Amino acid sequence: MKPYWITTNQPMTLGYGITAHSAEDAETLLRLVVPAEYAINDIIWVRDVRSLDQGHVVPNMGNLLKRGIWFPLGHDHLAG
Image (cartoon, helix red, strand yellow):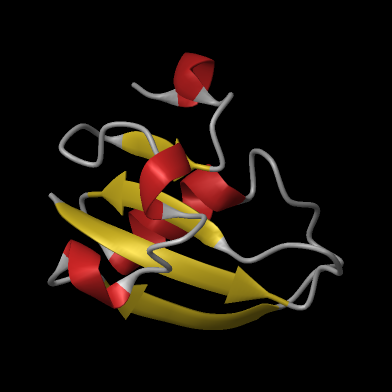
C-alpha cells in the first residue's frame, strides 16, 4: 500500500490523504466522501511526510500506514 495526496476542485479543502493499494483504489475511497461533480486535479504518491503541509496537515492527520483516509480526520469508518 502507498499513501497518496489527492487534490480536487472542491472549494475550501487542502486535499485528501489516502492510503490505498493503488491510485485507482485511492480514488474509490475518495469518492465515498467527495461527490463525482468535484474533479480530481492530482493524485500524488507521498514518498515523504515532509512534502506535506507541516503547519496543518501533518499535525492533524491520522495513520497513513493503514488503508483509508487519514486526512482530513473523521473517516476511520470507511477503511476496510
